[in-house]
Length: 114
Length: 112
View 1: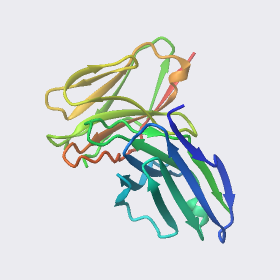
View 2: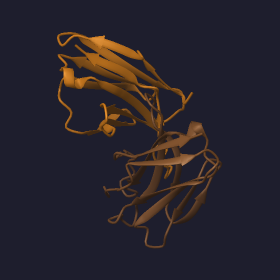
View 3: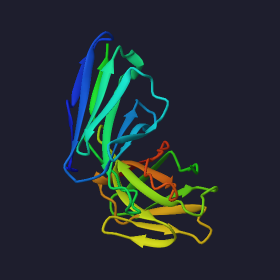
View 4: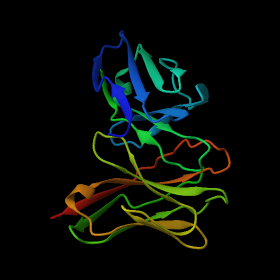
């Protein structure tokens, strides 16, 4: 248990569906992240939020839309996805300004696009 | 960000010490070196972080030579549960942002 929860843990959706992934951190951190991990590929950083402001967007397609309503919650809204978007989506949080690179990851959402 | 190179895989036996070396030839002055562990279908877990010389915690040790162009993660007396992928990352100490760039990692297989 890392203090970062993600729901749902598994999701199957069609290409025309709209769904959202939710992440919640109970650690009092001020930064949150979305990563994508495809089969046999390194983790890819998608979005970074610092103090609820999006500070990084790594050329992610617009069919992925993040939302950070407060420092504890992070969402990833999905619409018209492609089969190649099937992956493990990981949320993480950290405390910026401490000099530490320690990020706390959630268990991930296994997404399958059919 | 500095690129890292580490072995794709390693094998070991229970009770042995495992050393995984990572090369980061273009590490910058302000960069820190961080190691993470990842089990299948789970998020990575922070192991250790260092800047120079040696850092030790309850899980591992990190050795960094004076030129900082490489680092070695040392896992003492591994067990089957240490079978995982280990990632070496080099971060930018200047930006204040801690976004991580993961490489392919080293897949450690511990045998009985």
